[in-house]
Image (tube, rainbow, N blue to C red; front, top):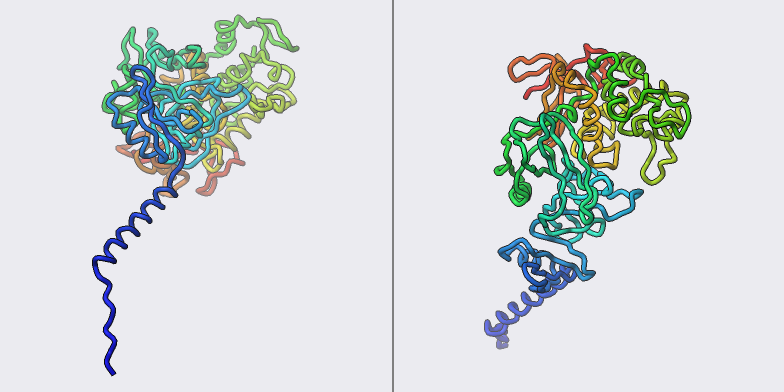
Length: 477
């Protein structure tokens, strides 16, 4: 029987078929990955639509190819979702509502745009739904629907820094669109700053005299154009609570008089302008300092900041001078204390030692006032500049006494840093990219003896026991 010859598929047939199949697969993949409608708009002269895409990344490439910064991308709802350079406006909600974001380390954070309006725009996610920003020392991703993106305009009253004699003054923008701002001194002026010069910074560590240079540097994660090559850390923001203040015996009352004309103790709400529940209370704060080993002047500064110098209703009627449990959404949940002594003791022991100064607690980011990047401010308050405001109170209360007698070292970490006991056992650690601040007791080469953040017993942290000044650790820098 004669064999039937095998049928051969001619190349002329299968090569075009394969080519068509690849085109079909590519087309289907292209359609499946469509994530919206994105229009690139040029604002250099009259607003002009440049091109529209159904993939955000294509629109982003087109925007970046345009040779100026007055350009943006809008989605199908008309919402600006990306710009080349500019601002993130957080003042988009009522004062009772916070804006949530996700930090670069995956941790959740929050802030209230009514206390700080402007952030620095850095990037937009591949789907056009999240914006990366920098503000008050933190970089985070926020939903594009929670904020507004604005092209940079030199007419905006932006958050900025200036030198006023020996004081570093921070101007904080409260409303970008209305050009509303407040200013306050936060500490001694850095030596690299000059008179009659405006400086921009959204981390408080590196400063620029030009917005564009700052924007480009931060977008590239560098500081080549900053006026300071080493990061600046304000003592009053970064000194840990585990320090002892050296305030003069009458300093707290003098401060209340200097700031608000207060010279009497308040007993009922509303109080007179010259009355406060904090008047004559320095002995109480200093006694708690000795009892729990928490800086008494820092606690008093925080009380002034949270209670309107001890004149708020919660301070007078509920003996709550720290705003405990007075959430933005429902401030009437504020904790009721038996008396002021109870409030200050609870703040030092429960809120600080067991919480914000406890490296094993979820709220811990360092026991210093800090900002939204590190310190108590990260989880304590929605005001992104709460740490600065508390530091400002401390700065004017202190008059340089603690700054000259307490030695600290503060580092922006490029790798993980552990605090060890004398035997080399790790007590707690700070992750790469975070800020760590320590009270320096002794220096021996690269090894520094520091005051621990929490009490230790049998080589382990135990916040239930009293803290003593001989609870020390070691770090290698």
